[in-house]
Structures are given as C-alpha cells and as structure tokens.
Image 1 (cartoon, rainbow over the protein chains, first blue to last red):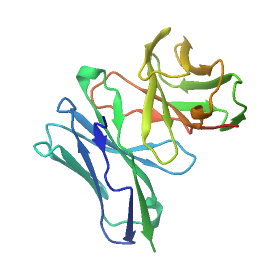
Image 2: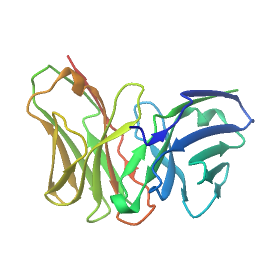
Image 3: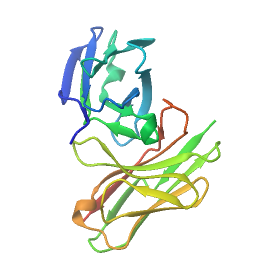
Image 4: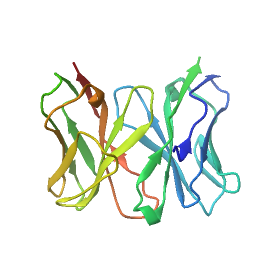
Length: 113
Length: 113
C-alpha cells in the first residue's frame, strides 16, 4: 500500500519555464511534507517542506503547495535551470509515527537548455 | 556543522557472502539514525531506524539487520546476501523535532553476483 505516490515518473521542461511536480498521499495522519532532490550516485538533499497547517511555502525558486482536502501537494520550480535536472522525491511524516519519512517513487526532471 | 559518512561507496559481493555497511555522523549527539534502500527505479524504502544506542526498529521483514554500537554509528549487516539485496543503500540522520528533515549520506551501491 503506497501511502505517498508520485504518478509522473518523468518530466521534461525547457530552461526558464516552470516545472510542476505532483504528489498524492492517502494517510490523513501525515502532518509534514518534504521535497528532496537527488543526483545519481548521491544521497537525497532536502529542498523544502511544508506543515499541514499551511497551504504554501516558498523558498527562492521553489514553492510547495498543499491541498489537504485533496491530499495533494505540488512543487513548483521557477525558473527551471539545467542544474535542476535530477530525481525529486516527495516525502511525508507523521509526528504520531515518530517522524519517520514515507517516500514517493520519485519524478525524474530533465531541464533542456 | 553536521556531516554524515557512509562507506564503501560501491560494493560487489557474491551471493551468500556477509555484509557490513557503516555509517557515522559528526557534529550532533543522540541523533535518530535510519537505513533506507532504493531499488532500481523505485523510491526510498525505510529498512531500520534507531532512536538511541542499542535501540533498533525494523520496518520490513528481510535478510538484513542493523546495529547501533555507539551514539553516532549505525551498521547494516547480513550473514548471507541474496540476489534481491542488490540496491542503493542510504543512511540518514534526523532529530525528534516535528517537521525537521532527515539528512542523507552519499549511499552505497551494492551489487550481488
């Protein structure tokens, strides 16, 4: 039972345009959501997070939106740069479960120059 | 600042051989420690986590075990490797604070022949 799903395995976008990555979850106990970026042969690096009491969090070119009623979140990258080409993982945690992270399957983003 | 080290970076082992992967964290005390596996084309699956020395929780039944002999040392082991143990293994550290991200090492690519 996948509690966190990223239904788009890959995304291709032109440099300078917006990248939109989507993530859906099923567990209503999740109270924090995080996005990680991963290059090949490296560990994931933390990008941005959002608490379930908010619907938007912005950090530079990265904005995460949360729609609790739809159990859906998205990551917007504007403008996209070639260095953004990587695999992006959505993750969720629940305080009641000891803050363990449940990851989605990842979305591979390719930013074309 | 905190750093996390994993070694080796790559490992090729025959079926039936033992395994020991080591992870150490610097710059923090009493961290939560985690072992994840990423199978090819898949997301990150939590294998084990530890909230203190000698305290190990297993998330999925498997051929692997984990130990935490020191506060900032986490070891992933197997007595006899299976072909299905191939994958990318990641160690991470975190805290008990709600919403705080986990921070990952660079991983070990394990290939079983």
